[in-house]
Amino acid sequence: MPEHQEFQKLAATDEVAPGELKQFELDGRPVGLCNVDGEFYAFEDICTHQFAHLSEGEFDAGAGEVKCPLHGARFDVQSGEAKSLPAVKPLPTHELKVEDGEIYVALNPKQVKVGGRRRR
Image 1 (cartoon, one colour):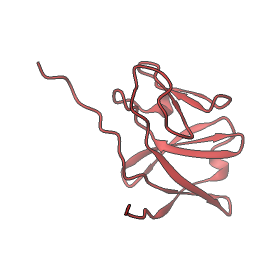
Image 2 (cartoon, rainbow, N blue to C red):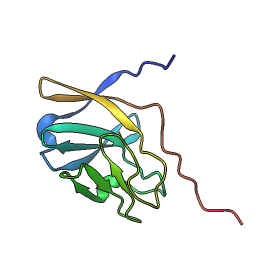
Image 3 (cartoon, rainbow, N blue to C red):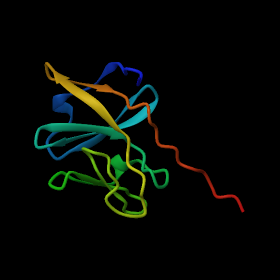
C-alpha cells in the first residue's frame, strides 16, 4: 500500500497567474507550479533526460506543455508524460489541492534521478 503523502502549503493562487510557470521549493525539492486557465499543476522541476530546471524553459499553457531549456524535451504538465525526445521517462507529478486561495501539494515519492557524467 503506498505511503500517504502529507499536503503542504506551496503558494498562494495569486502568485502564479494563468499562463505562468514558477519554481518553488518544498522539502529541499524543486517544484514547478503552473497555471493553465486557472487549473494548477505541480511537478518535479527537473528534466528526466539531463539535469535542468524546466521552470527555466518555455511554458506553453495552450498545449499544457513545458519545454526543457537544455535540449528541448517537452513534457505534459498534467500527466508528466514525455512528449518529445531526448526525454523518454515521464516527469513525476505532484498531487495538489486548492483551499481558500492557497495551493497545497503532496510530493510524489518518485524523484527524478539524473545520472552524472558517463564513465568510460
